[in-house]
Length: 183
Image (cartoon, rainbow, N blue to C red; front, side, top):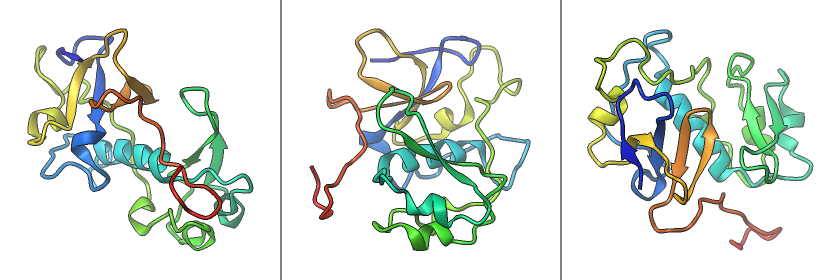
């Protein structure tokens, strides 16, 4: 279990508990991201988590080929496993070509927000012992801030952002076989 720490702890990470958050995201969460207020920093964190969770990781990746702006690419997964899809947000215009090309229908309109920004964990905007605003305002406990102890089952999806499953199973993306059935 993570031990809660303040925003000053250099080893602390933003922890997203998928058992509590689900794909819809936590409700009523606050975000103090000031650099690009139209796109909250925490929304960008959830976008990266969703891409890793829903992408079927096609061998040929028609979504990448369909993008006229080269905004999509396959990169090494943080855990060293299969490659994962990453979008260059400033190149994406939200045209929807990737959504049309995806053979599984996994790229949806809500994942094509233009110019989203990366969470900075409320850097320089908090009192010394305070947690990031998203943690303070998350009513369902899906977002926390603290250290991941050795033996905790979690996977780092972004620098400083961890996804964990409290049921004791290491989080793995949902995979489907060629027919679309869960494996």
